[in-house]
Length: 206
Image 1 (cartoon, rainbow, N blue to C red):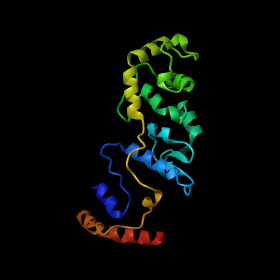
Image 2 (cartoon, rainbow, N blue to C red; image 1 turned 135 degrees about the vertical axis):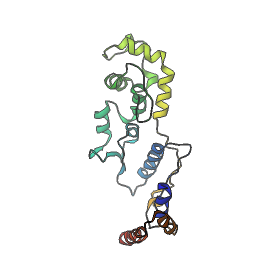
Image 3 (cartoon, rainbow, N blue to C red; image 1 turned 120 degrees about the vertical axis):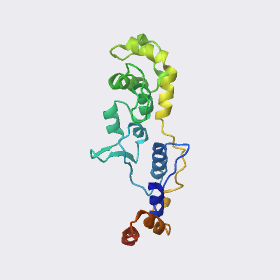
Image 4 (tube, rainbow, N blue to C red; image 1 turned 45 degrees about the horizontal axis):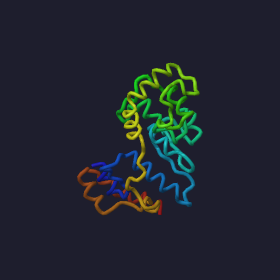
């Protein structure tokens, strides 16, 4: 019903079937950032995985905390750059997306190792070959070796797919007012003032 109402109000809705909502945000942000008319793109969510989309014109906004994060802020928060966020989550997990990460791997150990090696594939198999100091390194290395496929799977889950179908260009996002279908939706919702309010808002923005 919410999707139907938003569509009737004239807002662009991305119905995701084979993709996640985060994929839509990342894909649309990438398209918007490529437009020379766009000065800045805000991804309004605190979700950790969207941090990988930050860079250039793209920023992440946590509206509840009033925090705006660019590349430097993401790196400061997680200890790794946006390019390593998916690998980081592959190790520590993400409760919001429902995967646990690897046992023993915490934020500090994952950040230290990935800040040095960048990707899961580039972390030496043996802790003896690590040139960073991490508490319990031998156990962490063994866990990664034993559950490497799990780490890759978790990373895949955490990776934003920017090929998700969203918009061709930012012009499609311009709001021009409600659609005729809003009358029926408003009737079903018993919200007769909805049409008038939407039309007045559209006129004010014209």
